[in-house]
Structures are given as structure tokens and as C-alpha cells.
Image 1 (cartoon, rainbow, N blue to C red):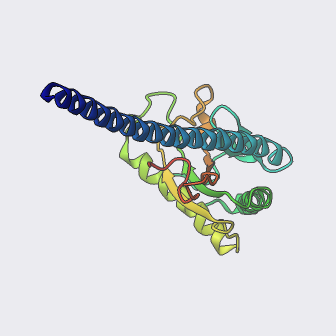
Image 2: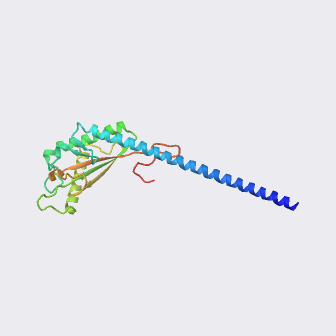
Image 3: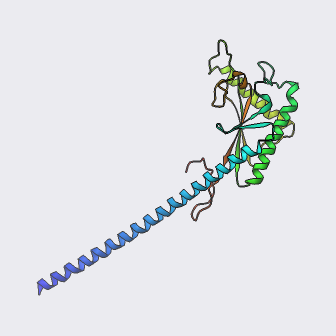
Length: 228
């Protein structure tokens, strides 16, 4: 009789163990499904972001064809067509030469128009607009690329451009656009490595800040370049 009771107790314990293992496996299965769903959602969001960025870059090239700006595909930047190899500033100064004020104003208007067109086509986007001043190095006895003077001068010239456009009523901060003004001196990836005189210019970069497409458990609250 005692042997029968021991046998029943074993099977009851075994049954409880199997039931517990079943529930553990069920919970792990649900967790895995949840993780896979989140990963799939993030992958879908990333694909959508890449599609939007590709579409935007195509628009950059198209919208700049008839303006004073030239789009450089390899660097994703704009330069003023009329100012390549031309020193539009007074020598060793950030003052714009009077003869070029009209063209500088037109460039600012074209940038504003470009941002307006991009906003019209992509109202869900915001942008980072970078105005980068540059300097040309001497061909004979070249200066040190890290020469502080050229960093300061190129920054002052970029700031001078921005302030001139602002004075002329050209508002580049419209259409949810953030402005960053900088000077690369005698450095930077946007330099013309073949014709040094062409580096007497400024460069415009328009960087899209694209929000995530909405998923079931994620609201579009961060830009594509932000950390999670």
C-alpha cells in the first residue's frame, strides 16, 4: 500500500514539473515573439528612412539645376557656381566686396527657395543647414593646414554671409531648419584638390533630419541620426 502511495506521489510531482516547464516555455515563446516583432518594426522603419533619404538626394540634384547653386553629388553639398575661384571678400577680411553683393543676395534667395521647395514636397522633414567658410592655401610655400588664422577667417566669412542674408530679409530658419555656421580653414573634405584657387568659396550642406515612421509601439519622436 505504501508503495502505491509513493508511486502516485511521484507522478503528481512529475506532472507539476511538466506543467511548470510548459508555462516557462510559453512565457519565453511570447517574449521571443515580442522581440522579433520589435526588430521587424525597426528594420521596416530603417528601410523607410533610407527610401526617404534617397528620394531627398534626388530632389537636391533636380532643384539645383536652374539656380545659382551647383550640387556636388559625391560630397552631398552645394557650392555657388559664380564664386568658384573668385575671392568675394576683401583681402584678409570678412567684408563682402560691393561688386558681389547682388550675386550673394541671389544665392541666399536660391537657398531659401530650395528649402521652401523641399518643405513643400516633404513637410514631415526638418533640416540642418550648414554654412561652411573655406580658405585657399598658398601654392608656393603653403601654410600649415591647421593654421589658426584661416580657421578664424573662414568662420568670420561664413558668419558674414549669414548676417548679410538676414539683413536682406532672407530667413533661412523657416521650414523647420536649424542653422550651423562654421569655418574649415585650410581643411575639410569639400576642398578642391586640383585647383587650389577654387577653395576661395563657401559650401552649403543641407542635412535631412527624418523622423521614424510610426509603428505600433513607437511614435516618431527622434531623428534618423539620433541615438536610441
